[in-house]
Structures are given as structure tokens and as C-alpha cells.
Figure (cartoon, rainbow, N blue to C red):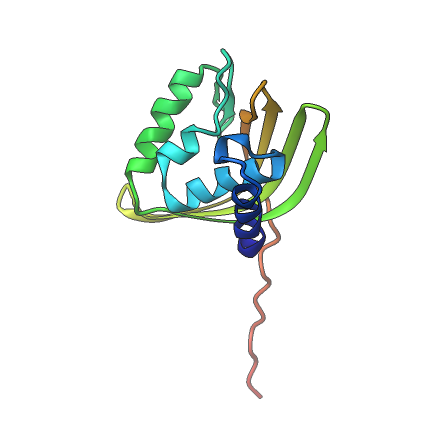
Length: 156
């Protein structure tokens, strides 16, 4: 998956397209790469210029102010100890809108004195806004994944 993102970026650049002129797939890849590289400037360039950016945390808390979203995420990016790994489950695109559903494995080495892990679904919605694709919706939902079963060994 990472190779596909790299090739998409190379194609964007190879066709004389600057990164702001990426198509939907290129913008999605750029957004995800910025998260993994903890590059807030690149991340912010993928965010809507509009007046509403919906952000839903795994606990159900809702935010809609793009400035508030940027401030929260800027603080998150400033802490470089976390890891964000994902699998893309589905990508859909229609005229002017595109979405991606990911399964994310998120880890922090220390949250309140304990290691922290969260498996969650991340739904990202991008909208074409005149000169490019921009994030308008970011929803995080706790994933209820099946737990591996443990077998007990018996001795005879």
C-alpha cells in the first residue's frame, strides 16, 4: 500500500502537477503520508478551506470548527511518540466527493503512565473545492475486533 502511495505522488509530480493539484487518490495518499510522517504542514494543506470540518472522536465527541480541528491536531502532531498504522478497507469516489474507510491501529507508549492502544475505523471524506480535494469529514469509531482465542494446554 505504501508503494502505491509513493507511485501516485511520483505520477502527480511527473505530470507537472504540484501537490496542491493532486486528484482524489493522490490527495488521500498525501493526507495519510502526512499523518505517518507527523508532518503537520503537509497534513494541513489537505484540509478544507470551508467553514465546516466535521471531526468525531472515538468517544462520540463532535467538533465542526476547522480552526478548532487544526489546533487539536497541531498539538497531536507535536507529540511524535505515537504510531498510526492502517489498512484501507474501501475507497469510493463520485463527482466532487470521495471517501476512504480505514482500519487504524494506533499506539502511544505512555498515556497517563500506561501504554495505550486503540483499534478504530477512520472514515475520511474529501470534497473537491475549486482547485483541489480537501478533507471535510474525519470520523473515528472504536473497532470491535474479534479477540484471538486462547487454548489451554492440558497435560496427561
